[in-house]
Length: 361
Image 1 (cartoon, rainbow, N blue to C red):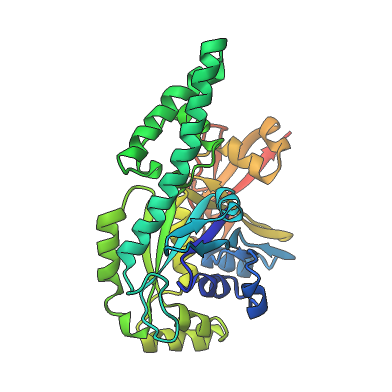
Image 2: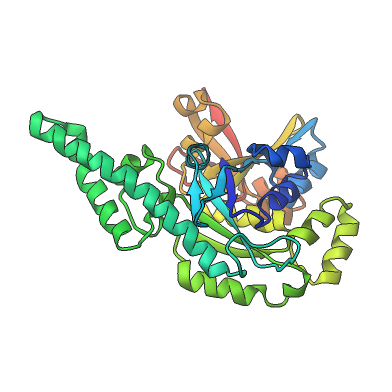
């Protein structure tokens, strides 16, 4: 899974990237407007607990790739300009994090004047809609021409979907807020439309806004919320300082500022929920590993995440939920004795936190 971090200049976009990836970007690299990528291990206390139990040779956390997307510049009239590189980099991501500036800093002026988060979010949404409409209208025109000349079966299936999307965008509705069938979703996926991507709006405040940031987030939700939109607050400068501390020191730091959860933990949790993801585990003396799947996947489909051959060679899944496992002294013998260790077939829908062993041919 790849998540792109976007934002207006001086919003703290690269600060967030450096904080959650624990990397340092040289100022010279920032000046060259280069995109940066990094893999982040997803913290999971359950996997840590099972590592203590099994003492495996290897522990493997789930990972997410973050991309600090660059290429956004200002036009002569102050309007946002989406470069070809920016659009190309944004389209390849599964979801987007839009960093929005809340903090005031006289030494670094906001490119649009006064700090106004509602304006900034609206500006991005408008530009994304214009980009999507340009793509959709071009495709609709091409399909209509082809249908006049000869049969275009693909075009016939696409046309009503694209026309509906165009109507939604013309009405100011981003595609992420609309419902589509599985077939319609498959058609739209090929176009990598920007407003169809789940969006996490990250409000970047300073130490003076710790107590008020949730109120601002509520206003953003009211104006731009939807089933595939999340809004959260973080404190870029504080979080960047904390990322350089030990866990113990960071915990003290967070208490002093009244911050309940780190930006990394909040962002990863919300991203999982936004994308409909969950984790299951495989455990043993050789390896304890967290696997990422989409909610609703069956045991057979989940087995294919471990190894593609397991899909066709799947026989049964041995399953116990993590909560039941730890509640019984982390003992397989005890969960089996109580009937909590189960054999499930290929249609079993895997739950968040299942511990699974795949029987295969």
